[in-house]
Amino acid sequence: MFEFLVLVVGISATMFVALVVLLKDTKGPSAKLFAALASGMIGWSLTTYFSLHTGSDQETLAWIRWIMFFVVVQNTAFFLLVPVFPDSNQKILDEKKNHLVIPFSILVASIALTPFLFSGFEDGAPQPGPGIALFLAHAIFIGAASLMRLFRSLKRSKGIKRAQLAYFFAGT
Image (cartoon, rainbow, N blue to C red; front, top):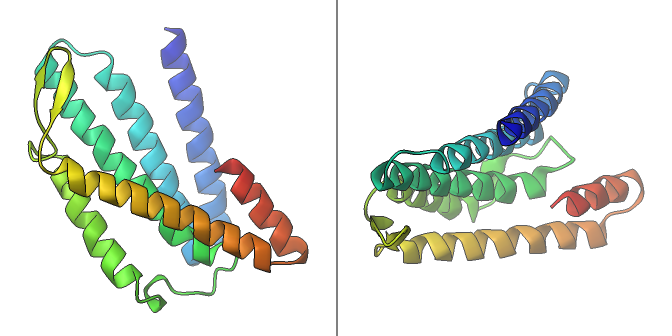
């Protein structure tokens, strides 16, 4: 019961912050990407909770696939958010690398929901399928690139923007 209460409080807080950010700036990419990141966090939290409270290995496997889907959503939203935060006047598709990252993320998120990522469940653990290599490449590349971009922005910034980026960096 306690873990369910923690889940509800965490999701409620995340939703509240995302709504405040969206209501403050309904058109900017920073707000939209922050909402996407928050949605990924909420989805990940819910599916993780459900994966721990199932009646069968097949149910657990289905929830684990959704967990991996939301990991891709979170990583991609974070990667796209870093260069536009806190300035909300930049466009996501202005960066050529995003023309590759977005379709690759859609592919990996789609694969995460199939037996291509986890082929089955044996001995209490999911069995990786061939798609796990794409998932790992996505997680490592997007995660490292996001942190490097954020660190580079932090080093180059000054004043209030530097303080905002420092809080953002501390939160990651």
